[in-house]
Amino acid sequence: MNLYKPSLYTVDDANAGGGRPALKGRSCRCGHLFFPPQDFGCEKCGATGTALSPVLLSGQGTILSWATVHMHAKPYPRPPFVVGKIALQDGPVLRALLQVDDESSLVVGTPVEAVLVPVNDEKQHVDLWFRPSTVQGE
Image (cartoon, rainbow, N blue to C red; front, side, top):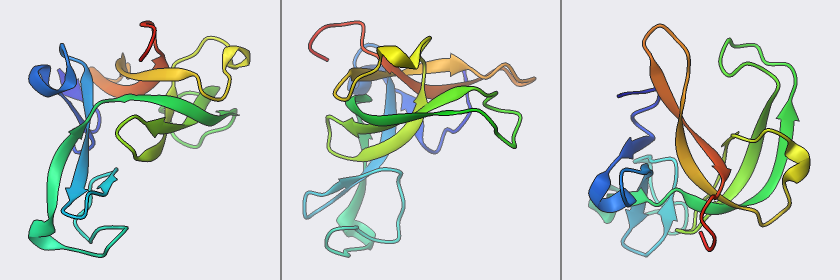
């Protein structure tokens, strides 16, 4: 499997639960979790170096807001596509692509899960998107 952005996510059977995608975040000794991973320092307390450690985030969350993009300068993703602001169950808030047929079905608080979606490029990459959860309670 060729991940489109392997520095941001992985597939980890043990920690992501049954081969689900897991996001690569950072944890600080103060307890703050953040995504995307970076080594500049904790956004909460400013700690650096060994105070920061890698952590896998579940890829489960809820939608806070969304917008449809109709014009995009790059070939991927092809418009129109939906970008959502997602609060992960683990804590961090991020923006990500949403896999939805019709954005009118979305409401604030919709549970979502990370999924891998084919990019349809020559290298047969898969990319991390979020879709409304198919399992109740996630």
